[in-house]
Length: 203
Image: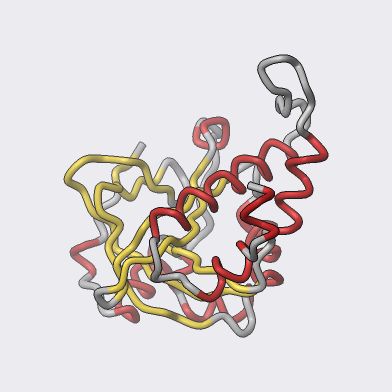
């Protein structure tokens, strides 16, 4: 990874989103995994021979921190009014469907892999500051973790980040705030999706 970083990997990830999205996806997911492990107390950052990669992983995460990235909203952050407050300056790139992903509502919105299902979503371009704001709202990495998914926006394949609910958070007995579902539906309408496409699995 360090060889790629020295060769300008961060600039490539920001400037060439449509070039080899599979490579983007792989790199982003490695960085997500490293960052989550570093932020969670007690997570293992050791290798097979008990060598500790903490400082090496931190260096990679720091050097690959993007000024701008793509973010997938599938819940209340499809609501543009809410996003203006949470992420000033974020812009909508387009709408998409998350193929083979099912929208679920254990309490707040989540997505889970499910063959043959598809979930409406809105793709945003966000800044590093916007991402930090979303991390706080989503409770990253305790309540939600991150994963990159390859999406099709206006015929272009790109890798974009989504928040995925952690197993521990799914099990919590939480009640969603009033108007939460209506807010998601408002986001659906505003993005051009039909309300009938809002078909979450309740669990």
